[in-house]
Amino acid sequence: MVEQTIFEQMEHAVLGQQFDFDRVFEQIKWNQDGLIPVITQAQQSKAVLMMAWMNREALLETLITRQVCYWSRSRQCLWRKGESSGHRQYLTEARLDCDGDSLLLVVNQIGPACHTRRPNCFYLGLATDQVTILTEPML
Image 1 (cartoon, rainbow, N blue to C red):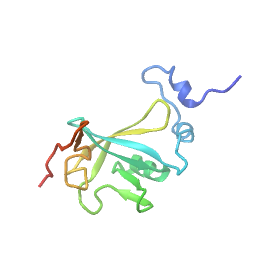
Image 2 (image 1 turned 30 degrees about the vertical axis):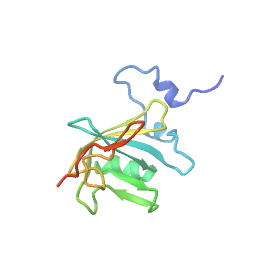
Image 3 (image 1 turned 90 degrees about the horizontal axis):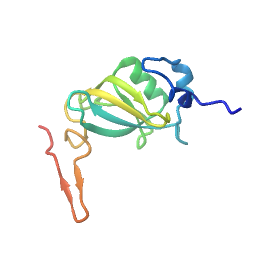
């Protein structure tokens, strides 16, 4: 008999049932670069703010400090959101998807989430004939 993964076991779990963090963490499906995609959502508005990446260290730091830390693929280092701009993200909830291959972070966002100073990174509206700017930069 093939042993079920922790994620297969959790599919049949009941509301409120708890599982050992270390056991779940070791079965997270990191990609070939040791990263997992992260969607970040504003706690109050529920708006999707951005998509980024985390490695193991960034995820653990975020869970421990409650201040969001990503992995910068371009700089190849930990990226503590808002460290230079002051536009920090404070974790209110972290969720792992059903397959263990992506994360959702719910945050209290201080200032704009996007480096363009817009409230979120998803400000480009796509249509078949045009791309429209949907939000203004924040002052």
